[in-house]
Image 1 (cartoon, rainbow, N blue to C red):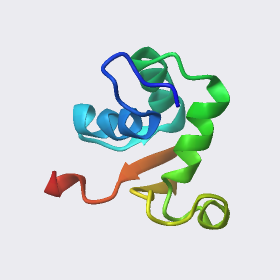
Image 2: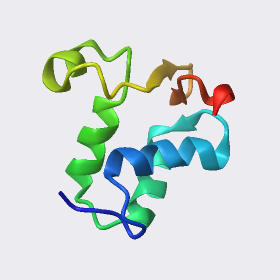
Image 3: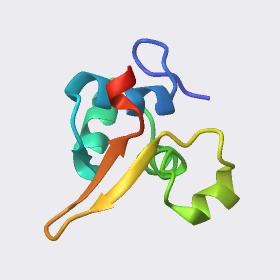
Image 4: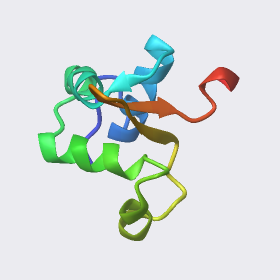
Length: 89
């Protein structure tokens, strides 16, 4: 499994985006931030991102539920992801 520039996994890089910014982030913003942290393929980043979303029901069947730490929220203009429990970190 490929590691990021600081030895982190792709999922850890996704989580670090929320810790860094401390606010809801768009899918495209997360993708851009993670892309800068490592040499993962685009499909790897998107699959890891999908696997972290709690309320993406098909993800539970594909990847199981232990990795879920984000909620997907859709507004009129954009879809965002919110880190579950960010205020506790």
